[in-house]
Length: 150
Image (cartoon, rainbow, N blue to C red; front, side, top):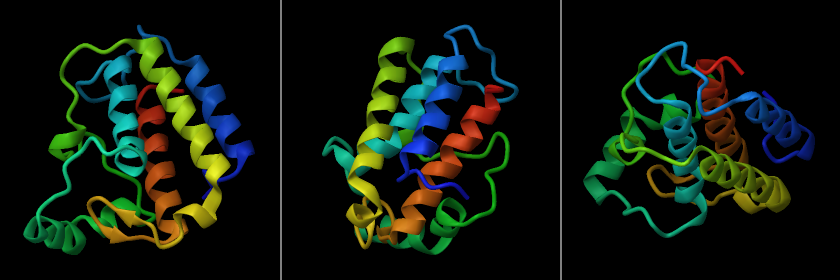
């Protein structure tokens, strides 16, 4: 798997994002392109911003036991899989704004590098290794860029 902490990988993702338009239709799922970008931004909001509420201890335990391996493991996501409530985007979003936010988050992630993420606390899963953060970020983006054919 490529690493989100390297500028070369970020440049490849940005090139794919530049092929996306507000009118690009998904190959599956209900979100439009603007909503998908906002959905992808949630991962980075959870990593960098203090705008999402952390799950309570019981929910966090359940997430660690039953969801964490699906999110940070190497197996790709299934099409039309269930998503966490914080990631559900149903209202209209501004395509250019969401794309610019995602690109900025990608640049920030690369600039901070793997060392910044090593042992860093995840809002949902507790401490993760840099490799787990990379897998989580990369796999999610790959899933949705493929969903939109870019």
